[in-house]
Length: 112
Length: 114
Image 1 (cartoon, chains in turn orange, green):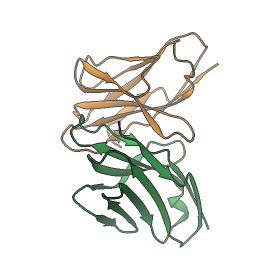
Image 2 (cartoon, helix red, strand yellow):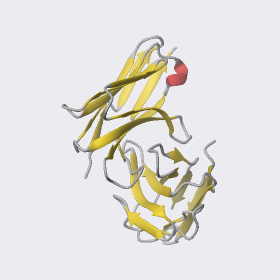
Image 3 (cartoon, rainbow over the protein chains, first blue to last red):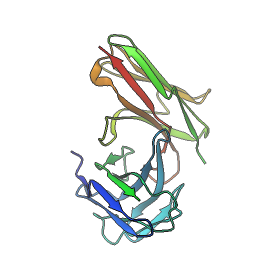
C-alpha cells in the first residue's frame, strides 16, 4: 500500500510539549514531504526534502522542524511554538523522476 | 508562488449522475495536474493525472480536461456510484520546481446518494 508508514495513528499531547511524528518509506524515493490537513483547507506543505541532509521550508513551516539523516526517514517535530498544532499530518514521497506522490496513512495529532 | 482554487467545496449527486469538479491555477508554467481521492480517515490516492501537453485524459468513468489558455482543469466522473463518495483534491506542479512539489486545492466533498 505505497510502502510509506507513519506512526502513531493517533497522538495526544499537552500544550507546551514538543512531539515527533514518524515517517518511513521503503520505496527508495529521493523526495519526501510533510503536509498538514485541516477541514476545508486542503493539504498545506510544511517541509520537504529532495535528498539526505537537505530540506526546505514549505508554506507553513513556522513551529515545525524536520531532519533527513537517512533516505528512508523524514521525522517531523511539532514544537510548542506551533500555535494550532491539532491537525491531521500526512507524509508523502516521490521518486524524483516522476511526479506522483505516494502518501502515508497519516497521524492525527490532538493537543489540549 | 502557485495558487490553486477548487470549486465547489461540496457536491451532492444522485447515483448514476455525473459529477464535475473544477480547479484554476495561477502559474502558467505549471505542467502537471493530478487528482487525488481521499476516503474518510484514509490517505489520499492518485486517481488520474494530466500533463500540460495533453488536453484530455480518460480512465473508465473518470476523465480530466485541461485548458491551458484559461488556466483551469476539471475532473469528470460519469455514472457515479456511492463508493465514489469521498474528498477530491486537485493539485498543480510548476515546471522547474523541485520534483513532485505540488500545490493543492481546498478539496471537494462529493456525496453520491443511492
